Amino acid sequence: MTLATPPVTKQAATGVLTGLALGDALGFPTEFNDVPSILAKFGPWRRLPLLTPAVVSDDTQMTIALGRGIRTAMDSGLLTPERMAGPVSAEFVAWYHAPDNNRAPGNTCLTACRLLEHTRIWQEASQLDSKGCGANMRVAPVGLVPGLSDEQRAGAAQLQAALTHGHPTALAASDLLARAVLLLAQGCEPLGLIGQLRSYAVENRGRYHARWLGDLWTRAGDASPQAYIQRGWDECLAALETVRDALRDPSPETDPCERTGDGWIAEEALATALHCFLLFPDEPVTALRRAACTRGDSDSIACLTGALAGAHLGAAAWPKEWSERIEYRSDLLSLAALWDS
Image 1 (cartoon, rainbow, N blue to C red):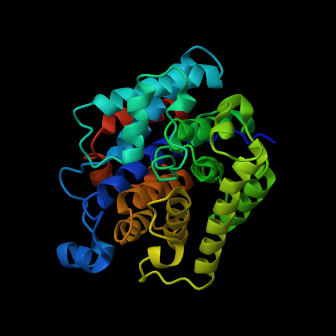
Image 2: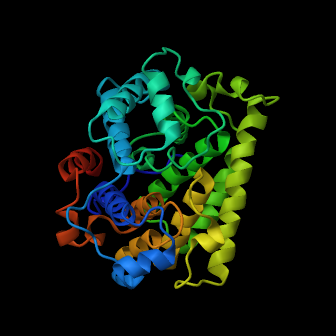
């Protein structure tokens, strides 16, 4: 069953894109630091400051690139793999060459984007052994586009992941993050989110989106397309279980990475972002600060946490004095305007 379009009045797209950029900007200065080092530099985590200027990382840059690629694809009609792969690849290659691409981007994205520039078959660029969080850090726009069927949304989420990260867990985690954004934008209660995501994962565990992914599975050495994609869903189901376990005995003052992982890989980034969001579902700024004050991939964890909180609470989630000084604000708001209306 296809879910309805998110309500206009909430401005979920503005909330998501602003939230992910704010989380990115909060976590960028703390990345590669352990919690004691972060506390020594910035003081108590509940008062973690948004620096001026509020500079973001490649997480936000690639989210904008994906959003622009989807916009171009849909300018000519319904979203299809044939319409999407070219424009999104072109945006990723443009990002690869951009002078602002100096924010410690991941090696997988750099390698794949370099290959995308020189091949007509995107599957040849996909890094099959990589399930880094670079695939799902940027997928939030797929959860925001109105009017997509479940098949289109899942296929688009997995395709954008596979352009760079070909490991099935990267595909499944991206699909789940896009689904979580959609569910929250539609008014899903946070307490029920993990259950809904788990049901979605179980339902899709053996579903390989051949129309969107082509022969990608044949390059991974699995016995069948179902065996390939099941590997990803099984790892994501295990990750969702770590979130459920952590929330049975919540510990807001403890680094969330200790319970749900450091976030350098796709399923851990998803799990720890869900963990941070669900610790503080109605305190979005606190959730962002908790996500940014972690030992792991803090900018990506906080980026995804901001997307979840923004989907849940909309544009009103974020302090005006923060949202007005975020880097790339005009680009983010132009994309949000397409999907809020």
